[in-house]
Image (tube, rainbow, N blue to C red; front, side, top):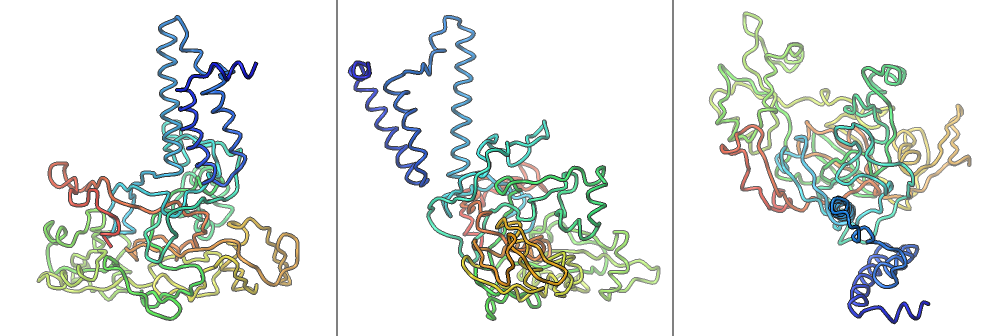
Length: 473
């Protein structure tokens, strides 16, 4: 029976099968998973033996049924193709916030290459293409949590390097309060208390867990590598005790007092400050005491002159200092930075502008466990590397039920920060980024829209289109 079946196979069928079989074998070798070889049986039947009538619907005599099934076939093929491309080759990413300005701007659409660092095998393979974690309109999960596969990354073109801009899954997004995802769950617990977050459903909503690949995508610059000791002193980054040179687009927040009137739109355009970042704090209720703290003096009527809160690069700071109407400029103090990582430990005294020193975990490195190390690394041990961690009242530690005085890390970790240093929730707020959270590298900007301008009045930033992301550094 089988021999007769193979004798009837046309040469064209053998050619089609050979091409797809070679491609499939190369894919299997790349993935390093021999179980995928069973897929060759499907290819054999599709192109050669045809025991299963894969295209039986095409023989239907009902034109309407045939038309509908043709559409279904095309849609399924498109969805599968998009799913594979999105997982293994590239995905689209839109810049949602100003944390990387002036390097990447709000409204930039990026081509993110998965091959740059090697694509990950998805933790949740059954999911709807082109959605991260929620289906629009239906407002429900876009994925099924079973099966859930462990971390595996196939070979890519390179590895994360210092000062790379990297897209990654938000580490503190493992647990999410759906009605209040920002600030993250752990910061909300610190500021509001666990009971309030878990019982006030109207405010915080349902508390859910998300697998690694379904946590929100973030984009930041990698400033700290595995094994580095990083410290921030007076807004300057030091790596292993040596000053790390800032990228040219790094900016900090300043409070700028104007003698009278307001800064013109032309000035803001010259400074490249968006409308959203032009915060007029002298007219915001609740800022008065803070402005006095910064040594701004109200007038005789108790009102302040015009005072802006503006993010400025070094170059922009030099420009605004020469504006005749500017009376006083003060950098935002470290106290305004809010909670820093680890948010559940108050014994370090670190701030946004003066942080560390902190050692960044490296795969295979071992640390001695003590109160400080446990405060800094317990999320790595428990949440990211999936161990049980118990700390007794006597300070003794058990990892996976075994008394432990040391711990050896399974993953490499990275330290990510935004170039807009005072307007960026980054590793200073939520800690390390494990290697299994790395998504890919932005390659180029394929579209850039300025929401502050009309479509025919500079709304499309033509000069940014199809430029490599590296060229903005």
